Length: 111
Length: 117
Image (tube, rainbow over all chains, first blue to last red):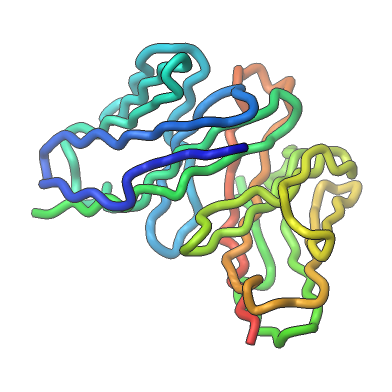
């Protein structure tokens, strides 16, 4: 079966650091993706991990441990515009685009 | 460069009817994927088309079908609509696998919000 878990909601303060966790159990694994989705808008790509370790991209970093089926997205220097849902997705097959998405974590950044 | 476009943006149908949604990918993108997004189930993969062929399929009933045309534009069709089909339907396009990156970033359209009454 395919299962991805994320916390439903998180709250953090402007300027702070927040870590959004994602655990997965999928029938295949060919990369883990993080997407950001603002309310009423389409998801936009944030990061990609296929090997264990940390990938850094500006204020955003993503970590992967394949042996543990675990990833996290780290957001630094939070800004109000970071209030959004963050979706963890596993590409389960290396032929084409076949993704399993987690339920998403709704992050609220407070002043 | 124009983004992914989807039409219509909003649609209201009644149970038993059928509906066709359209997606125009970014120019040069040949892979088009369709997703259903609901508050309860999140984002669920429907199917992917590449070069007019269905390459991957999610776990949805046969009432959900799609096709892709030679210009990479894609349509999805839902027949015999049910109340539970009310959702945001998202289309995403990406470059072919030879884009030079280790992954193919998907670019999502704004979605079609379908309401079934």
